[in-house]
Length: 446
Ligand code: HEC
Ligand code: HEC
Ligand code: HEC
Image 1 (spheres, helix red, strand yellow):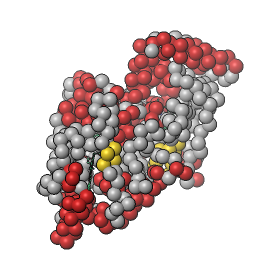
Image 2 (cartoon, rainbow, N blue to C red; image 1 turned 180 degrees about the horizontal axis):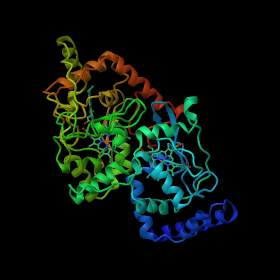
Image 3 (cartoon, helix red, strand yellow; image 1 turned 180 degrees about the vertical axis):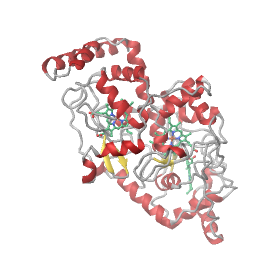
Image 4 (spheres, rainbow, N blue to C red; image 1 turned 90 degrees about the vertical axis):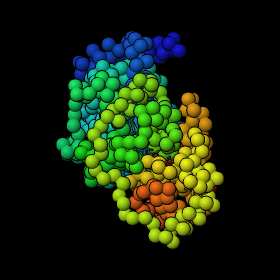
């Protein structure tokens, strides 16, 4: 393992040096930095690898079926698809000519080597918190990645956003540049957790509501957001219904390590996060994230809106559908069955303010994350083929409001919109957006 790394480092360093020799020698700093690269210590590379996992770099920078870090995965934004780019050490199409300083500037300030702005689909608004030493370690690790020649996929953006200068305006409102500064009011553990969650983990990229420009509403941090395509990311505050108030620190660690616990199971984008990122984090680091999430002021914003219960007729329809289709696994009292079938009663995922995730799961089914630590990988069947929009709305309203659950009502229009997103996600023509090629997570009813 180490030998392979060492050879990789050596080969990459040689390549980088060669590249520096024949091209781009205009900037002096680049020379210095590149020649400093030849032998990053194996420990530095290993640390960089770990940090890259914490930042989920590989998943986002690898398209379905593509070569690692060569880019091309679509990142959905409210304005259109932005494609990740090649960050292998290839000098032509990757970042082979970038210096440590160029790399730090991208991570810290969202600026490319050529001085133009990167789109915030690249999570630099979070990565800016990462320390210089950690960014340098990731750079050292990337130098050991196999170079791949692969040109970028053109973004699908409206004309007014194709000009990268527009991002400067966005940054004025939404970007707060600066490395993480420890908060002396809190423990070292808490600070480590905050550093990871707010930096490389970029948890609030999905778990915080967004403003009209697609920037995070900082005043409502962790109060629930979206991962695009109607996937709702539940609140992570201390509320009981929509939040992790009922979860212990160990529950949070177990979920991040395995994708499920006695309260909930991941099903969509979070399965990707667990499988590609958090499952690899050390227990101490996961415990630190849990500490950070638990020791936060009570969410002040109202998380679960109470637009009343479904009317009696709708509730009866939902109950009938539930009895026919769901009780075998989730039980009539919604308690589920141990670690096998998650409970729906009292579940924060089910009662999340935004119902998108629940609707996705009922329509498309879900396969639980199957990390080494918990290789269950049980599947929830898809109902898209069996239930129409009204039926899905009825059964979802039922589980969100039965057994003491309480959450806002869903109308068939939302179900229709999620169905549309689902088709986009699964259509081979547009590429599979959230699905990892070698482990099908969800299947559309087909
Ligand atoms: C949510 C998806 C996502 C994640 C996670 C992510 N990136 Fe990216 N990254 C992107 C996108 C999209 C772009 C292209 C943005 C653009 O075109 O402006 C990008 C661009 C970059 C660039 C600029 C390259 C260039 O040639 O302009 C670098 C460097 C980079 N990412 C490194 C990383 C590293 C290191 C990590 C992990 C710590 C990471 N990224 C994690 C989506 C992501
Ligand atoms: C790409 C978007 C995204 C990122 C990044 C992300 N999450 Fe999630 N998370 C989700 C979504 C969506 C769900 C809902 C379930 C699912 O999709 O599988 C979720 C679910 C969860 C849950 C379960 C909550 C419940 O009530 O069931 C926890 C806990 C969680 N995420 C913690 C985190 C932490 C901690 C991080 C950062 C290390 C993080 N998430 C990063 C999208 C994301
Ligand atoms: C064959 C067994 C089975 C049946 C039948 C079934 N489910 Fe599931 N369900 C599962 C499994 C397994 C999971 C966990 C998969 C995951 O979320 O990754 C799950 C997860 C869920 C979740 C997500 C829970 C969470 O914590 O995120 C919801 C919501 C859900 N099911 C609702 C339903 C509804 C509504 C029906 C009936 C229309 C139904 N299920 C029928 C097995 C089943």
